[in-house]
Image (cartoon, rainbow, N blue to C red; front, side, top):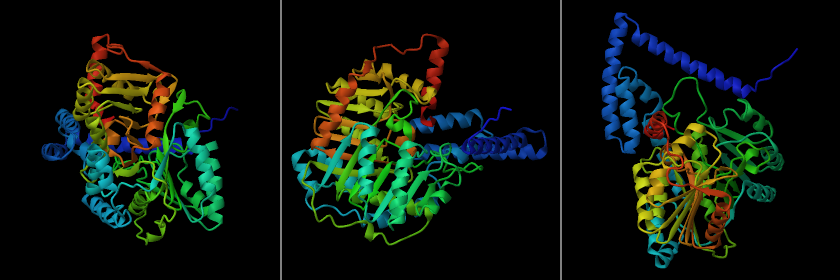
Length: 510
């Protein structure tokens, strides 16, 4: 007899979806039945929708995001407002914002400004100084001179260095990832983590509840605890819809002893190191940072850990003095973004790079679903003579998102932006490099979710060898790409054009 085995994670996701559908069906039945109670509820919810629209209009968020929600509520005024309260309310609860703000205030103490670094950088390049000053003064992420950055142009390179650095850990290891999945990559890392935990090191793992919904079983924290590893699940999935559902921890951070750290696009699953072929060859990027700049990444992790666990702790021991100062190789400025502070850090960093570019700006991103401000900046830079090039994937992980990405090509190409698709597979790297002088490597995609709804992070590198490594990687990757021609993916039928227009309209929700 044939027996079909279904992963517990898939069963859990199916049950979760069925529970949500059942609740929505119950609400709909109540609203549209012919009872007196239904009439009163319908009128009440319509009034709620009206006030929700007023709230949306006054929020400080992207106009495209406001527009799509207002349209949806106007189309279904009875239930639209309630749907927004469940799934789209931005910002989220005041209580969570206050808690995060308190934790962030405490974390700032450990991100000490490095004396003279900002002024020295400003003297080298005033545009650099403005970018660095924004992150240092507004978000309290300092720029560091006594740190080094090493760029990895693949998940395979990161994986090999990661195992080496983990083996050297003496005090603590912190991991924060959007996706973790059992396989060669994660199991190899887990063996080292378990060994270090047995040796008495403080080992902590934080992963996203939705990102790992289908990759890890629900009792995985218990398994890690049995290995001596502390574990927390960020914003886990719940059957009842939550206003926090949109806020995902999309960061990828690994910290060793407060002296070495990794970040970038590479999650801990086998497709990221091309052990398995999921969407063709997986192209990614990561960065290794050593020195005082690691303190910023450590504070990011501890902030998210305390936010999720609700446990306050003395953290000074996680920020060791870097007595052996790294030989200067440019300047490094790690930074983070969160959806609760009304400051779109990721978008601002990208816009500053584009607007300051004088000769070129090269970009890699898995998704290209941008708002009016980002589109205007890219097109204006190209029209002004800046060599703007963007690499996106040829193979997609989400077909509808990829189609939405392609719907932006014509407008960009007409303005002079050179758009390429990575022909060998899936481009997952999130990198910017400009004028042989400035680069960004991080977790933020060029789409609405990353730019406005997720917790993200990255590192800016000013001058230094890592900047040229990012550029060299981009130029080598171009050899495996196809340049998009004008009209190449323009919809040929009325239905196709309608679908593209709908996808563009829905872009803030994709």
